Length: 150
Image (cartoon, rainbow, N blue to C red; front, side):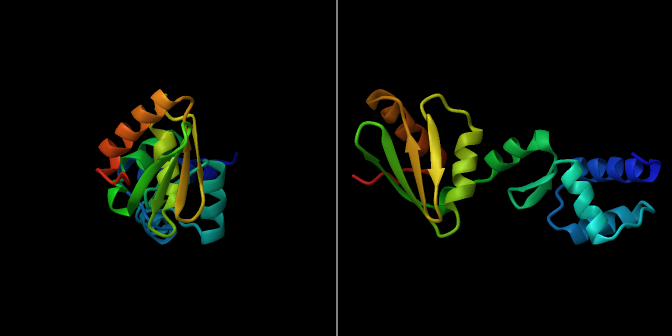
């Protein structure tokens, strides 16, 4: 890696660690304030090489991604959830919110939830047993409020 790219990528890491950055334009401005000039395509390549992702509406470094997603409060985007059989919970969300909510749930690494599958406005949560389904329902109530269909 050449010295200029290395210096630019170190600066990107520092900027992202110092505070939230929501757009590439903001990141380019922050780099310019540090005397580092880059164009959008170079910045995109740097972000890809650094494995920077967008989570919770901001750019985050790989180690921070799970934490950033799980810090966002998605309770307003959750419409309802209902158990279906002994191993499934169906969660309804606002349109376009199922995938970020499923990511947030997966980021919590809760042993009562075996996995999630997200569409556009629906998340399926799989559980191993009826007992873990009951635990998962309690967790969902804690995380998103009492939106259980009865």
